[in-house]
Structure formats: C-alpha cells, structure tokens
Length: 367
Length: 234
Image 1 (cartoon, rainbow over the protein chains, first blue to last red):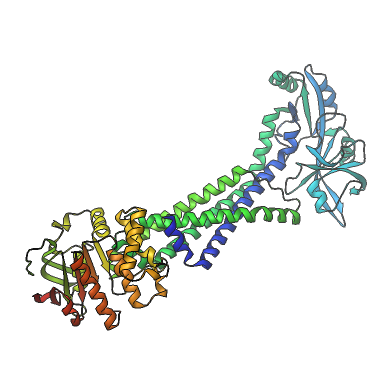
Image 2 (cartoon, rainbow over the protein chains, first blue to last red):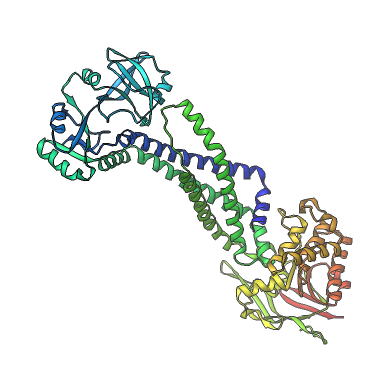
C-alpha cells in the first residue's frame, strides 16, 4: 500500500515538495508557539520556583507577585523571626522600573533582596557573581544580550548608577525581564525605605507549615500566607490567564489550518485521480484499498513534513533567539512527540474526510 | 438467444433490459437481450455508437444492475452476489480491456500488471512470476519499467491485455479494444484476445463497432438501439 502511495505522490514532485514544505512550516509554527508557551511559562515562575521558601507572606488579597500588589512593612521581618519555628524571613521588594538604554527607559522587574538572607536572589548566575554590596546589579542574560551589557558595565536607573556584576538565567518572562539589586537600593529607588513586597520564610520543621501559617496570620493582621507550592501554582495560574492562552489559540488555529490544507490537497488529489480510482474499482480493488491509498499518502506527507520540520525547527529557534534574545523558548521531546502525534491524527482525520469522495467515484466512469 | 453447443457456460444473459432515467426522461439502453457465452470462445458484440454495447458489457461485469431480466456468471445470478463478492469476482475471474487502454500513468507497466495480482490475493512470488510470464507472452518485457506515457498505442494495449489476463481470468471483457489503434495493431490485439480464448480455454467478450473484426470471432451478436439485430454462430 505504501509503495503505491509513494508512486502516486512521486508523480508530481513539485506539488509534493510544496505540500511537504507547507505542512512542515505549519508544524514549525505549532512547535515554535508551544516552545514559546513553555519558555514563558517556565521563565515567568522560575524565580519563585528556585527560591524554595517554605512559606510566602504577602499582603492580604495579593496571591501572586507577577500581577499583584502587596505592600508590607519591613518591621514584620523582626516579628516573623520571633515566631517560634521560623528560622529566617527574607524580605523581597519587587518594583517595575526602567533602566536607561540610550535615550529611553526599558522596563525591568527590579527585585531588591537582602543579600544576607537565603531567599530573593536570581535562580542562577551564568556569568559574573552574585551581589556583594549596594550599587551593584544583576541583569537577565537575554536583557543584557539584547542591550549589549556585560559584567563591569554601568547601568542607570532613575539617576542612580549600578555596576553590572552578573548575568542571570531563568529570569526572562518574555514581555519583561528581572534585574536584581540589594534591598537598600530597591527601597531607595521607590523612596519608601520601610516597605517590602513579601517575605520568603524558612522554617525549622517542614511538617509544621500549616501551624506556623496560622500563627503568622494571628500574629500579623492583614497578611496572607502561602505554602511554596500554592504560591508557585498561583503565579503559574496568573500567567496562564494572561497572554499565554493566545499562544495556545494560535497553535490551535495552526492545527485547524493544517487540517484544512491537508484535506484540500488530498481531496484535489482524489478529484484529479478520479479516473485512476475508477479504473482500480473496475479491475477489482477491494473496498478498503482506495481509502488506504489516500490514508497512506496523508501519512507519508505528514511524516516527511514532520522530519522536515524538525530539521528546520532548531535552526529557526536559534536564529530567532539570536535576533530576539528576550524570546525564551523551551522545547522538550514530549512537545515534539505531541505535535507529531497531533499531525498524524490531523492527517488521518483529513484523509478519512477526503476519502468520502471515493464513494462518489463510479466504475462506469471509465467506460 | 445464442445457442451453446457442448461447452460449459460462463456468461448467460436472460431477457435483460436496462433503462436509464435522466431528469425524468427514460432511455432504454438495453432492451430484452439474451445471450450465452462459454469457455474457449470469443463473442463479438457489434453495433454502432450508442447501440448499448457498453451498457451490456457493464451489466455482464456486474457493474450495474439490470432493470429487468437476469445475468448469470459462472452459473450464479449476479443479483445474488454481495458487492464484496462482485469485487472478488472482478479481481479473480474477470479481466477488462478498455478502448483507451486506461493504464495508470503513475505506475510503470510492471506495476500496472502486478497490482491486479494483489487484488486477486496472489503472493509476491506468484505475482512476480505471473507478471514476468505475461510480459514475455505479450513481447513487452523490455517495457516493464516504462511508464504509460512513454509507450506507443499498440504497446499500451498489449500492457492492458497483460493486465486483464495476468490472473488467468476466465472472462475477459473488452470494450472497443481496437478503436484507438491502427488497423494492423487492432487486428493484432483481436488475434491476441482470440488466442487467449482458444489456447487458454477462456471466454472473451468484445464490444466493437468495427465490422472487420467479424473474421476473428466465433460468435457475433449485432445490436442496434439496445435490441438484438442479428445473431451469428460459426
């Protein structure tokens, strides 16, 4: 069956090449959107994921840090650390501010943290070192690459200068990147030295998370306490209700376009080969032979397109990331397998849809 | 009705009529025709264009059903065959030769012939052997890897006959097999079909408007306007 499908496809090599190319680019588009989706999803919450605090304390009604406002007093740090069972409370101040690049400000998610405390810093530093004192800054790697910053450079925020001492990874949320300064610097920038956004808490016994949460709520009114996992889930949920669904919608639209294009091509192929199919019916082809021939063609086209797409995809991603360093992608074998399966299912569906036309080909047409 | 001597019957058509209905207008393509054809003979159905020859052939092949009357193939009424049984019958026991050869352009000569073996359920080895045998018999072994557009009209028809006979079909139905050929090529083709009927002891039914083919045949059925005009048995 595959043999005859190949023979029919090979009959028009230009059309075959265009079909495979078109479908391959559709697959590349779907893979790319999926990679961006996971890249952004991971990049947005990697900061929280890597700061493995036992508890997160925020102002009541604030349930995430990505798009939530939380203002707490720095005095809570002392109160928190006096609660029995709490080892350390790391204050974190998050603010949106602009780094001056040439004549304009580029917005960053500036994170101020206490360098003596365990939490609040970047997930990983891939170039340079961590903060050691005030007036130092760690930039996101893609941000630095985009604006040509490296360790030792000076950046200006408002009227203050900071020395770039390191570049971080896992701090790119596509539309915005994280930057890290000391808590003092962040508070100076905001103009209110007595406030922070949240506290990341380390406790002595992980089994007492619920009890200590309750104690915090009772001790400091107006705050909410989340376990690490709940807080991480809250932030993921926030990302998923943001622009991420649009990426998925575009990926779904890509699938629909693929289905339509494939159905159309297969239907045209059937119409063009109407006479051949009628001949095969007359000379005794079994009832399943012609549908299998069409399915075989669809599967061959989609398999060739998948291979082509995989060959194209990784260089395309590398090229795109070099042009747009802030574009964060994450591709896994599972994603590739998922898209391949989707394409095969789409091919099967398209060929079954197109195969209906075969029923309307009558053997008498050849006489 | 054409009378049969002693040979077993393959095709028997009894008082068959076929009426087509186009937009409320009834056209009788075949009108109360009866015939019988047996192993080892070539039956020529002669008639001008539009006389109902092709309709009669498609009725015999079970591709359409008669409006009235019965068609018997190998002793059984084809009205009782399921569509799957009819498909198997066409794959294993009926070969077709068409006016315009109707080879599949995407397949080379060898593949055009061997595809039928697949439909008839032959193994790969049997398919290879039968295909090679037929290619030799038809003197087209050198054309095995060529594609139909690369062949002459005569070569195409030889390939088409090879396809029709590759599974040793008991019945060959040929619709105007010489119409697209030059005179000599046409005679060669009809001689090939006649030889197949005699030497292989098969039944060949040829529909044609060419009166010159009379000399190659055992039986002639002349039809006009869907009715039998004349019968002749040698």
